[in-house]
Amino acid sequence: MCGTVQLERDAGRAAALEETLSVLAFPRDWVRAVSRDEASALAGLPLARGGIFFGRGMLVQPGQLIPALLATPGVRVAAGTVARVVAEGAGWRAFDAADTELARADVVILANAFGAQGVLAASGLLAPLPRVAQMHALAGEVTLVPAAALGGGPRCVVGGEGYLLPDTGAGCVAGSTYVHGATEARIGAEGQRVTLDKAAGLLGGGFPAFDALAPGSLPGWAGWRAVLPGRLPAVGELTHAPGLWLAAGYASRGLSWSALMGDLIAARLCGEPSPLETDLSRLIAPR
Image (cartoon, rainbow, N blue to C red; front, top):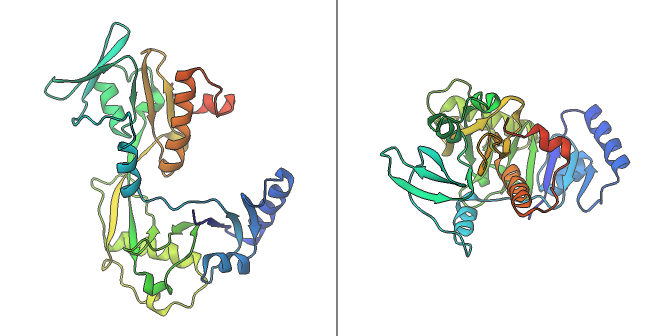
C-alpha cells in the first residue's frame, strides 16, 4: 500500500472535484483533495498539478499476485485451453479444440477476457448477447523507465492522463497506449513516445535524464485489453444458459474490476447481499 495521487486535468476540474468530495464527506484517510505542492510531497518528486489522494491505493505486481492466488487452499489448476462448453443435465462440460473433455462442473465461469467471445460463439451461445458480440481486443503497451532518470521515481502511484508507478526493481512503469485495429501487441518507438509523453505530462519538470530518454530504446510490455461498448464489463449468469457465468470486458481496469466482480459473483452464488447497487448490476449484465 503506497497511496495513489490522481491528478486533475485543470484547475477548474480540481475545484469541482474538491467540492464534490466535501459534499460526499468521505473519510480523509481514504480520499482527500491535495494541492500541487501536497501532491508533489506525497510523490516525492515535482508534479504538474494537484488532484486527489487515495491513501489506501496499492501497487500490485501481477507476477507475484497471480501465483499467490493460485496457491490458495482449495484452488486446483488444470492445464488446457477451453474451446467450447456443452450443457449436460444441470451442469456443464468443457472441451478443448481436439474435443477432449477438460472438466465438468455445475457452475462454470468464463473469465478469459476476449477469449470468452470465441468460446460462446463455438458453443452456440453468443447470439442472444449482442453487447458481448461487440467485444474487441485493444492493444497497448507500457514502458519501464529507469528509476535513476526520475531521481528514484515516485513514492506513490501517480495517475491522470496516463500513469507513472513506483520502481519495483525493474524500473518505473509508464503507461499506456491504446492501439485500435492492431494486428499484434508490440513494444516500439511510437508507443514509447506516447508513454513517455504521458509521464512527462504528469511531472513538473526538472529531470534532464528523463527528457533525454530515447523512445524505442527502453524495455516494456505489450498486451491486449478486452473492451465492450461503454467500457463497462459483462458480468453475470447467462439467462439462456443457467449455470454458465461470464466475467469479461474489464478494459483498462482489470485488477479493480476483477476483485469487485469476484465478490459480486460469490455473493450471488451464495445467496448473500450484492456489493453493487441494482442500477449498476443492470448496466453490467451480459445481455
